[in-house]
Amino acid sequence: MKLKLICIFILISFFVKGQFLDTFKVFLHSRPSIDARLESRYSFINNSATKVTGVRLGLSFKRKLRLGLGYSWLDTDVFEKRTIMDGNGNLINTKDYFKFGYVCFYADFVFHKTKRWQLSVPIQCGTGMYWTQYNDGIKIIKSKKRLLLFYEPGITIQFKVTKWLGLGLDVCGRLALRNTNYVGNKLNSFVLAPKLLIWFDQIFYTIAPKSKLTKKFGPAYW
Image: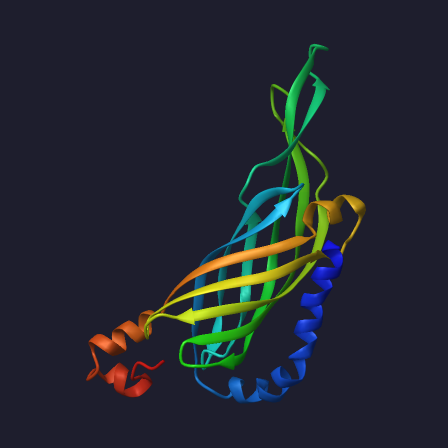
């Protein structure tokens, strides 16, 4: 059931693909602005809520298309209890932690926009490594790092409160492309990313309507 619902997000991404390709060249000929952010994405691993933290850096074209690169890592302790033998031959209980980090490419295309509401399709795919590690009482023992490939299609809903402040929510499906049973059970999941959006350029245009920057790039708009 979970995999079927993730596939729905994939179909949504292909549904707007034609519109995306038709307008892609137009956006690329416009003057871009910097898209830099720190984000948190919430999902489930082993039926437990987890947080993945990431940094993003890219370009925004007319606030309708964002492209860039990022790095994300698991920011929650995810572990399984296990019993091991220490160096003295004694059995001890420890925690075997699951870890991963990855580099990703992201694109976010707006396909519907009104004064306050906006719908867009965020897509990101990337590659990285996952591993496990535990403490044997003396040192950290890490497993062999293995390749991780994934794809995250979804949809974003955004509400603009003022010209410079908004709220948003990403609802995505995370699909591990290197889908062994171990990786699939760990990583295939829904992903939620609530957002508080602040457009600092619009704040500047509002408080300094006569500045040279406002006359060149502004004014503030909905």
